[in-house]
Length: 153
Image (cartoon, rainbow, N blue to C red; front, side):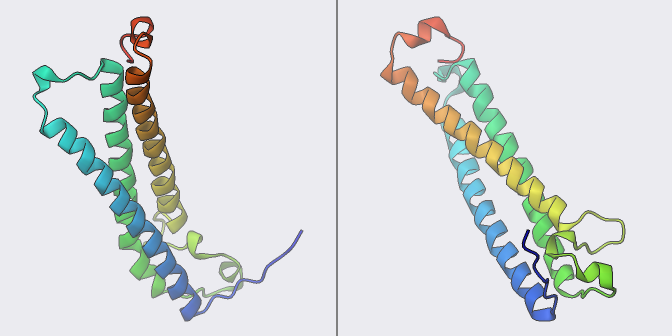
């Protein structure tokens, strides 16, 4: 198994934090756009005339919840990064770790915790959004399908 030497310097920590910031900001922008579409769908529709079946409404609501939770993780991750850039490892065991093990408050959550939360909830949101889109297309493509599972189609 290959073993890599970690190179912890002010420059590498700053570069890693910059990459993490770019990745987090991109996901936040995508999620904000998706939440905007969901909000527009709900906001510009008379709820009494809403033609979505209950199952699709539930999937859409769960999608919004997943993206909102992911946004929460992303914002806190962005808040954590400047403090991480200001720290350098002080002892030999810490020098073996990477940016995902860094934190700014003693006993606080690490960059890895917030990054994992952001990524996992984003993936859940994308999966649910894709499921919603597939169900919407299926309900129009296969007109008889809704009779079998009316609550979902």
